[in-house]
Length: 260
Image 1 (cartoon, rainbow, N blue to C red):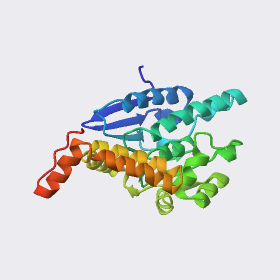
Image 2 (spheres, rainbow, N blue to C red):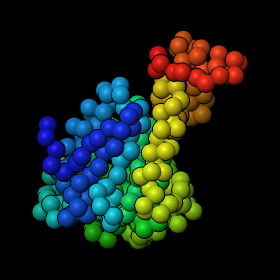
Image 3 (cartoon, helix red, strand yellow):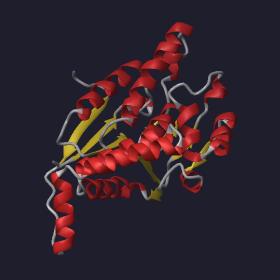
């Protein structure tokens, strides 16, 4: 599938997926979401990609939201279909085996904030803005925002952002836990790449199992989550990387993981 609205590149073991509709501030229309879903499906099965970074093209916008021009003419059936394919795509991103970092380089509104929340964590440039403006347009968040945002920032902040339909800056997003850190825009991608490479240097299987355990645990009671953690913890002892990592520690030498 040839992409018109997104770009995907690889830098060593790091994948970089860029939403590329600068004239529309990288807003998500049906075509873009379809391309995004196709690309994520390929990344899912790409053993070369250990960490994925998602960002937007240009210096103004990560993703400014869903494409309101396209949405404005939809009927209830069409609106629900658009929401469903977008939800499914974002859930696929959330459940990728690889860790996913959102490099938020500007507006992350509506669908953009929802996309960022589907990533494992978020780094923001100083000019980033976050918000869920949907109720001001007569709709609810429809790409997972009513579920993921309160899980990321807590019920109070999540409800306030959705009910008020206002924007917050990067510093406020950092204060409430929506982003992990804020850096100057010119440093954003270098910072994300540095962190991605640190993650990629660790045992691939262990990182992916840890992600699965965290995601499963968030959606169940703590006893069930701990039981799953016990399973993956034991499973790690069947890997070559566990043997190498612990041998390197005991022998006080550099580790050399083989992802097995």
